[in-house]
Length: 98
Image (cartoon, rainbow, N blue to C red):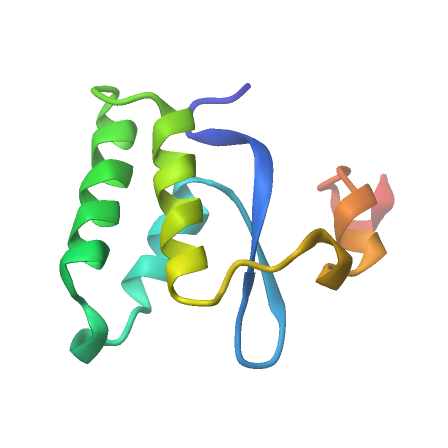
């Protein structure tokens, strides 16, 4: 497992799409976009957890679980059935499939 990569991706329901969260970078991206007026204690706690994992002082697996709970709390955690089959089965990240 690469540094900062989750052992299994999480999928977040967004307004018009489902976003794959495969590691700390993706989690930071979503958190950076979080509306300022919705940044409550749960938001601050998950940001702290992800930051600590990025610094190496907390296991990435713990940060993933915290992030998962955060998505669930905000009704953003997508069920596997909601995720397109291509996203679930395609682990090849090369552009063009090469």
